[in-house]
Image 1: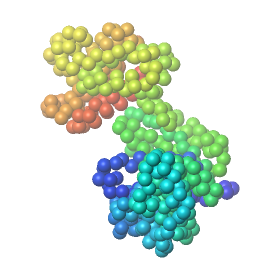
Image 2: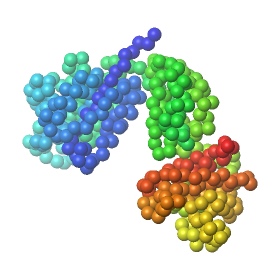
Image 3: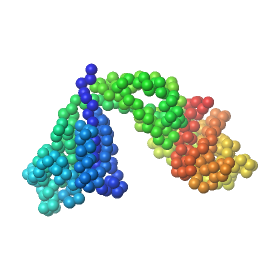
Length: 421
């Protein structure tokens, strides 16, 4: 039997500057992560401008949805900062001077050799129904409300001030109020299979997951993350339960799994190459060195990365990379014949165990009927054999470069593992 109930939260980020795109809301992302760590499930994150009707509607909606409402922004002393007066209106109370808050603001300015103005004194006037929460690193206090079985916390939008209040007051307070579950996540990272195909392969496994384990599909460029989330009151048991269901699904999708949790595809490649004591070299045309950039972004990549050439023009594919002129003339740069020679020659030139190559039409121009924009060839040469693959991608140049990188790295991964068949 569990001794907890699910506790939910909504995060309200307040400020026109967020809606205008002048400031990125990193606060809500950070708060979500911290709440997840203590077992509080965020059900919604809302951004609302400095507008009375919008804010009051957001307060009302949040109260219906969540047990905990956490707000950031709108606490300055100027007329456009509406959070404090609107919370007083929402909770039907007055705003009065809090002597302790005034002393804190006075001390804050004195320590910095600045005068306490009448406008700054307004920071110490708070709704009478709130609990004053000192802000040790700023002038706008936090305000904690407990009304109608719900708790509310209003915090400054300045990230370091908000984080200080969260760590020192909000998180401990929530933990003292509620018997919270443990939430355990583990992410399976897959590549080389689309979301719908993956869902079809694992549908029976998904259907039989235990009730306390939920699955989410998180697709990205050429990849799909499977997030398993377990709820309970014993961390070790949850971890064991998740590992059990992962062991059950691995035989179905082992070829596509490259890592877990935060491991990137390029980190996985580096790990495999180091384990095998092998090295790789690249010849990149349409990807312009982007694949090499990903590989070398990993610390310690000098142990397995030999180098790269970017022979963007046919002249240099021939003169530097030694691709036969006749091959280029007859088949073109974007062809299986050319990409095979690129992969094999770069492997030899750089003394690598694996030669990885890309050549294609990234766009938005340059395609034709037989080879439209988005046509890309990749190849990996190793141990006397070369595996090549044709990709038909999009009309977006940067997207094509990124998708080519994912496909090429996955091809290298499969070659290292001997799973190319």
